[in-house]
Length: 274
Image 1 (cartoon, helix red, strand yellow):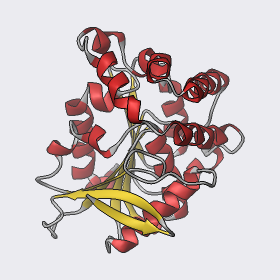
Image 2 (cartoon, one colour):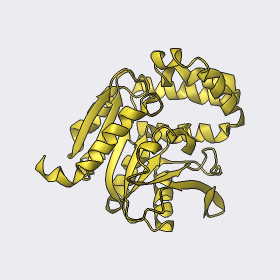
Image 3 (cartoon, helix red, strand yellow):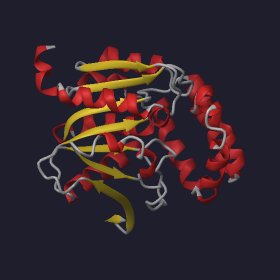
C-alpha cells in the first residue's frame, strides 16, 4: 500500500504494470462511494498495454478524511500533485460518475497533463431530479446506518437485471459499508452538489483534448441526456451508450466499457482524419 503525504493527510494510491516504462499511463478516477478495488473488473483489460494508476480521493476509503470542505477542484489539484510525485508528465484519464466530473475539471485546469479523457456515466451540470436524489443519499448518510444508506441508493445505481442476477449484492454491500466514513461521504456529496450552482457545461467548449463519453442506457442517476449535453459541446468527442446497464456500468459491463476505451485509445493517433 502506497501513500502520498499531502500536508499531513495521506492520499492512497497504487500502480499496476508500472515497471513497464515504455507504456503510457491511464489514471482511473473513482465514483463517489468507490475505492481503488472497485476497478478490479476493469484493470485486467489494460495492464498488458498500459500502466494503471489508481487512487482514492481524499475522504474515500484508504485516503484520509479532511477537516475542510471537499471540492472537485481540490481532487483535481491532488491528482496533479500525485502525477508530479510519480513524474508522470501526461496521462490518459478515465473517470466514472464523480471521477468523470473531476476528470472534466482536471482537463480544463491542467490540459497539458492530459493525453485523453474518458467520462463514464458523468454529468457537467445538475438538474432537479439529480439534485433531490443526491439529497436523499445525503440524508441516508446522516443516519450512519449501513442498511439505510445502501438501501437508499442501491436500486438507483444498479439495473434491475444486474440486481436480479446478483442476489447477494445487497448483503455484501451492507457489510462493506459498516466501516465507511459517513462524515466524508456527506462532504463528498456536498462537493458534487456544487455543480448545481457552478456547472461545468459553459466551459465544455474549452476542452480540446480527445474525449470519449460513455453513457448507460438504464442509468437513472445520471441519464443519457447528460452525456448528450457533453457530446454537443466538447469539440473532439466520441459518444457511446451501453445497452441494458445502469449507473454502475463499470461494474455491470466491464468488458463493454473496457472495449470502448481500448478502441478509443488505439485510434487517437489518427484523430486528425475524423
